[in-house]
Amino acid sequence: VQPYFVTSFSTLSAFLNRHHYTAIIILVDDNTRAYCLPQLLAETPQLEQSYIIEIPSGEPFKNLDMCKRIWEQLLHWRIDRNAIMINLGGGVICDMGGFIASTYKRGIRFVNIPTTLMAMIDAAIGGKTGIDFYEYKNVIGVFNEPEAVLIYPGFLKTLPSDELMSGFAEMIKHALIGNKTLWNELQTVNPHELKDWSVLLRKAIKVKQKITGKDFRETRLRKVLNFGHTIGHAIESHFLKKNKKLLHGHAVALGMIAESFLSHKKCGLPDNDLIAIQNYLIQYYGKYASGKITYKPLKKYLINDKKNLNNQMLFSLIRSPGNPLYDVACSEQDVKNALEYLGGLL
Ligand SMILES: NC(=O)c1ccc[n+]([C@@H]2O[C@H](COP(=O)([O-])OP(=O)(O)OC[C@H]3O[C@@H](n4cnc5c(N)ncnc54)[C@H](O)[C@@H]3O)[C@@H](O)[C@H]2O)c1
Ligand SMILES: [Zn+2]
Image (tube, rainbow, N blue to C red):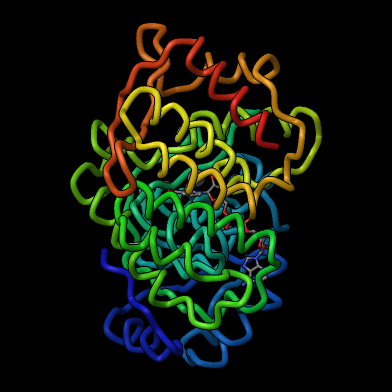
């Protein structure tokens, strides 16, 4: 589906008027209930009779236990298959809400209204839904598209700056894998002072849509979206294990530095591009992991990465900004060198 950019929720009203749903359920977390729900309700009279489900915010609640509670609630309210669920929140709400809707009574319809930068350009679009299971991220889920995605950039005003920068890292990734012009543009803006996100949002979303449109179930091309994520996930898991907070996008930003080094070694990413990418990312994200990254503790997470086949480590890399490659085999020594390179910059 094509996301709609909106400046108010009259679009949602019109959408709800065109369809007849037996019930409307809105899924929020404590923050989106406080910061986003009031405006949505005020501008959408059809939601007056809706059912609201609030969950605590944060990744630890994107789990089966929470799904179970929500499915129970839906059954308790006797929600039938002609109901619709509105996911109002960040990636956690969109991923889990999409999964709950897709499986309840074999699937009810849902709409995503992303409220974080991460969700607007990534989680809410592309049709991946799911939850974490034990310590494994996103391992249970289904591919399923929402009925609609509504992007209201105004919600970004209340987003904490670390969360904004976490999403911004995915925007940088979209630029590096799919839009060189956007990459050049990003280098001239200050994300902390940007007033109007809509132009950048549109361009970043276009990159993701183009890729997922060609390979919805990630058999080939969609893998390029994993740029920065193989090493990024290992860094994220390592920090999680140590009980240190490192947001997904911050880990991916550091992963992109290491994987740009691999891109330079394995795919001919030019020197000057490598330097530009690393300087740019270090200025924003270096502080989140200063001096704390070495190869040894990350090794076990890299070996288990789901993208590996036949004991090779397979990476999604770039030949140049805007020009991606997938399934590039790298040896353990290559990866070790990349992490040592990253560690040396921190
Ligand atoms: N399905 C996909 O393709 C895909 C892609 C990328 C990420 N994800 C998933 O997305 C999740 C991360 O998403 P996220 O970064 O949005 O995290 P999140 O949903 O936890 O939101 C981050 C924080 O911001 C708060 N928040 C949300 N909107 C706000 C607003 N407008 N104002 C103030 N606070 C607000 C939330 O309550 C939360 O505390 C991860 O679980 C990840 O796996 C999925
Ligand atoms: Zn990501």
